[in-house]
Image 1 (tube, one colour):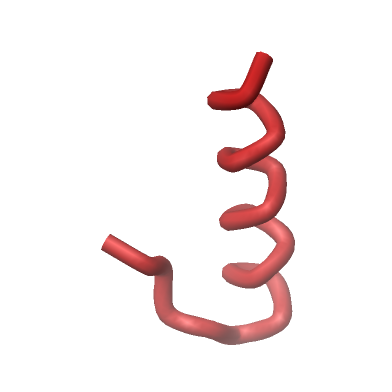
Image 2: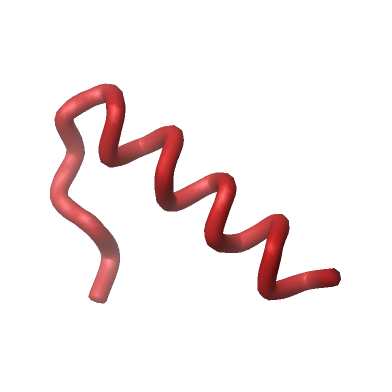
Length: 22
């Protein structure tokens, strides 16, 4: 479940226009 939450957070940031935290 933690993975899903992390993925969602990253997706939201990407939508805002922030580079993904690789």
